[in-house]
Each structure stands twice: as structure tokens, then as C-alpha cells.
View 1 (cartoon, helix red, strand yellow):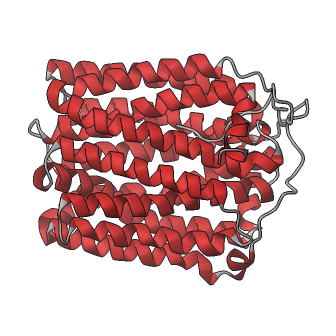
View 2 (tube, helix red, strand yellow; view 1 turned 60 degrees about the horizontal axis):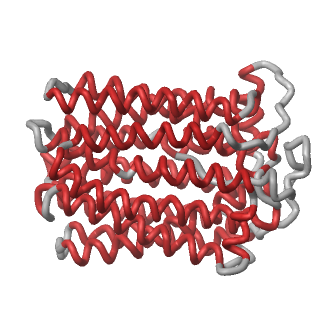
Length: 424
């Protein structure tokens, strides 16, 4: 890490984008804590929180495909800046609602949906931009470095956010999140790389082209279908974890520590992914993902904060390792002119069932018990995580150093034109 890892910082554009994203991720860490505390500690219920999260996720799913097509058509930087400005407005609006005490489920959901729609355009644009910003040989390293930056920001932001929200209220958390979007937008404007725009055809023709890129690759199709099944349970955990943390493990401060533990795990996972290059990455990555929900059973037993924190670190180490290997595999084996659309289809198909899980979490927990639903969801997720290995191509897919041709008009190996790899 001391040599290869930090070498990616020599690229000017990488430094700008990494700085902006680091600050944005720092602000993002305040958001889930502020939202959960603002709702659950002020006469809201698990079902209320589930409704807000579900509508937010549905909006992201609906807008994701359009974001992918436009990211392959336009300059990604422009889309990212506009998305950050929209998310700034939404964050300030939510802060005002919590500060005034006049919030309702409908008003919070509406602003969360606006923010999610903007995020649905931001992410494919980032996916389209990032492979052009570092040399081919540095892609896994850069992916891992950005993962480390993201999780490092989560550590600081979550630990700080839990305490700050407990002391000053949810409005402060969303104000900080809003300021972080300003930082992201400013830094994105400093990125100089110029991706070549795709020649436009029909909107739906371009959508179908992205889908064909997935269906023609069995390893990619199996991974996305496995993730779709996985996220049914994950949607439930998104609602149940804050409820257990706030009501049984110590309140907002405990939730902040748990969020920080996910960051520690991700940080270690990034280091591991940076240092370890494996010949068959997905053969190792999917079993590691199954470790995450198994570790999260500690919320049910022994339900002690210290044990939950340790299992969270181990589980998110595995998750971040999978994400780096999965992202790098896509960059190496999918043509770059299709990356934004493939990324948007990946997000859509992987997360389309997530809102169902989050919407069912509250009613199921009220009917069958929180611990029982949590345990079943974790066990189901572990099985889903292993399902892609049933496909031979998943087990046999090898790392590649020969990706498709770059999209940039100028060579992307220059230290003045390379950049980073992840989105907020």
C-alpha cells in the first residue's frame, strides 16, 4: 500500500475528485443517523421510517435507467454537479423541517425522493467517468483507495454524527450533509478529463444495449440476480437495525458507533483489496459476502453492543472486498462505452426488490417480532450471497489487465488526467 496504493494520488484529477467525494461521504454519514433519530425519537414509528426509505429507494430505482443513458451521452461532470445542487436543496429542506418541528412523513418522503432522484443521475455519471481517470493497471488499486476514503469518512462522520445529533438534533446533521454537497460540486468542476461522448441513437435502443451487455455475460447476470435476492433481506435490515440500536443498544450514540464500525470494516476491506490480487476474484468474493449477514445475527444474540461492533467490522470488511473486486471485474470485462448503462441496470436490478423489504420490515416485526424477522432475513441473505457460484462462469472468471478501449480523447495514463473511482 505504501508504494502502489498511494501512487494514485499523483494524478491531479484523482486528487480533486477524491477530495470532493471524501467531504461528501463525510456529510453522507450524518444523514441516516439524523433521519432515524428525527423520526423515531419524535413520535415516529418503524413503519414511518420504512415508508420514507421505501419511497426514496423507489424513486432511485425509477430514475436510475434514465441516469445511465444520459451519463453515456453527456459530460459526466455536468450531471454530477447538477445532482449535487439538487441534493443540497433537499438536505436544507429536511433540515428546516426538523428544526421547525413541523415535519410529516409526507414532507420528509417528498424531499428524500428529490434527493434520491438526483443521486440516481449522479451515480451512473460517476461510473462512466472513473475508468478513464487512472491507468488500467491501477484500477483495482484506485477502487480500493476510494473505498478506503469512503469508509474512513464514514468512521469519522458516523462517530461524530451520532454524538452531534444526540446533542443538537437532526437538523444539524442535514445541514452538514448539505454543505458536503457544495464541496463535492466545487471539486467536480476541477476535474479536467474529457470522456468521449457516445453517438446517440434512440433512448430505448440505448437502454436495451445496456441490458444486452448484462444478459450476454452469465457471471454478470448471475451476480445481479443474486444481489437482487440479497437485497430483499437487506431492505428489512435497513429499517430494523436503527430500531434495535436506538431502542435496545444505547440510542443515537450506539447507532453512530455501529455506523463507524461499518466504516472500520470497509477501511480494512479496502486495504485487503488493494494488497491482494486474486486470479478468480468472484470465487472468493461471494462467499465473503455471505459472512456479513451471518455476523449481523449478533443483533439477535447475544445482543451486546461490543459483539455487534466486532461482527459489523468483520462483515463490512467482506462486503467492501466484494465491491472492489466486482467493480474492477465490470471495468475489465464490459466495454467502457456501455459502463454507465450497465451500472444503472446493475443498480436497478440489484436494488429493485429493496423497497419491498424495507416496506415489509415494520409490519412483519410488529406481527412476528423484531428478533425473529431479523434472524430469518440474515439467514436468507447468506444463501442469496452464495447463489452466483452456481454459475460456472462466476467460478472461473479471471482477473484481466486488458480492458476495452478508453473513452477519453486523450491518453488516460497522464498524471494530469487520471481520476478516481466511486460515487456518493
